[in-house]
Length: 123
Image (cartoon, rainbow, N blue to C red; front, side):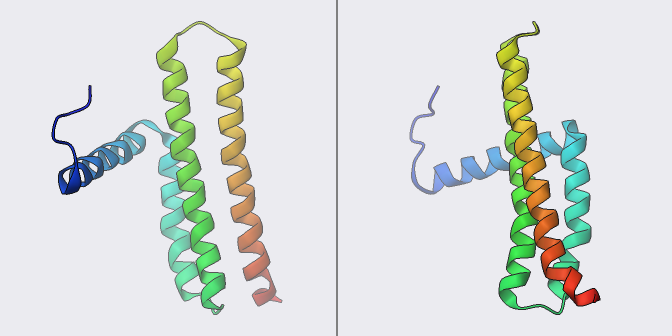
């Protein structure tokens, strides 16, 4: 049910609260999200201190955040599928597998980007 008088700054404040509630839920219930956050905690300082251009720093940071965003969406899809029912259904499995594939592709993108930018520095 849509709350009455939910507009303007009040809507923004409520939406922000829901966003933090979602982040807390993901942290509490999703091991993969916790692992990826810990990876981000390690990688983001490396991106900040790497001797690369600002655009390259931005690419490093953005790919890390893409992984976190896709993991959140994957977790949301899994939660909805689990809410719909406990029975095994091919479409439920397909939805979960596709969402998992999105996480995998985002991790590949992150790895490729980091490799392309940082490996030449080691040569």
